[in-house]
Length: 264
Image 1 (cartoon, helix red, strand yellow):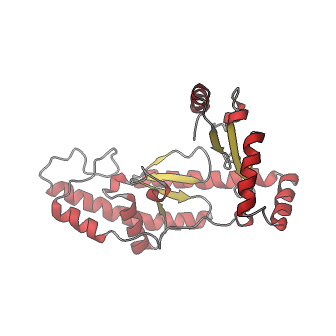
Image 2 (cartoon, rainbow, N blue to C red):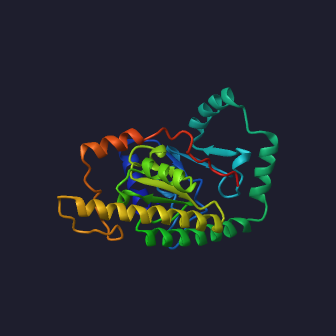
Image 3 (tube, rainbow, N blue to C red):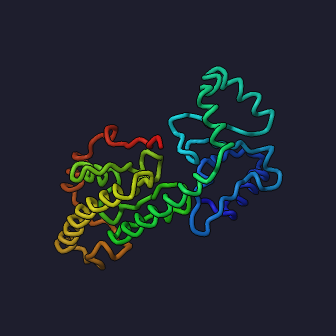
């Protein structure tokens, strides 16, 4: 989650180089611990050079209603509206009515959802730490960005093995762009009992991974400073050409295992 200092640095750069900023703040209701949602629109001279993207899907669990909005300087909006008209005119009337009811109605549900996600978040990150998996501490939204490099596998291989061996479906970080090769994204949207069941199944894979890494470390001619995966950081075990080719040959397309975001 971007800090106030990060946002101020982006604003300074935008003003210095006369840039337009697009900010997606749809997760702003969901921040945890002492984290702060700080919008770049609060920075001086940024309202006339910022486009804000937001919606109702996250705060009100209205993903299936497909209602969002874009706000920005009038000159930009006049041009953007013309493009929007060519694509879909507007959201369905019933969706607009539902969004209006959500924003004008009681807001207690947001705090309730945030407390539920926070409870699941704390359980999940504790379980990940116990398994020896690193993660980016989730200060906002309802996902956990998990580092799987300690397993000696890239994320695509690891999540595919989880799916085949345990039936647990997790998105590899690579579907979200460059730099996700060592990460997978876990969601807090499912109930606690399902998260607990997934973690229990993952633990069996992690135990077998620990045994494999320990065996490879003992066989490796290169001295290993740590034979236990729980002692981080740890470099992936060295691979010879045969192992590297076998892992490449086993890598399969992931189009069938990418999970979709729930509608509520």
